[in-house]
Length: 180
Image 1: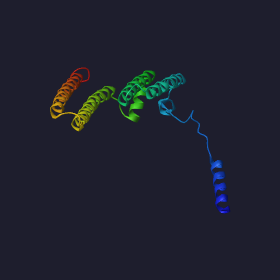
Image 2: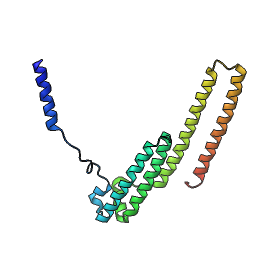
Image 3: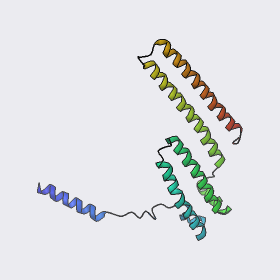
Image 4: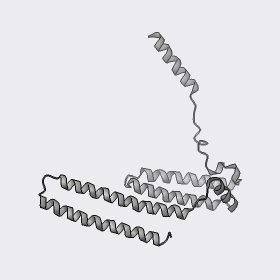
């Protein structure tokens, strides 16, 4: 028993002696820490101010219980794109070129197009899953007659096909419209 207690006491002492505090102020190194961009002090202060203002906005979107996970993701993507555009407006052409050479070229239009296309695909998948779940619920309901089940499933299929066609038309309009 004494050996166990002594071992525990030594372990606790060793953990306390090696405990470290984290300096959260300097923990995150953003774009302002890139030495090869040669940012001016004015640019650094503007970027830091932007980052301080965007953090609470992301947190507010994450805490908003009225939004679904999908909607939160969309809003956060929109906010990130706006934030990126604001930072790019602070940088000069040479700094943007250096950043793109180091981290790759960013085609914002392509990303928006991909996000929109993916969002319609996700909506179609969600619609299909919802239809299947509702169809199973109708089939598994023991209180409905066969004729009533058949009528409800027919109505459900009609609404499903109508919504699916609407989403497909919206996706086509988006592809043919703004983001070719």
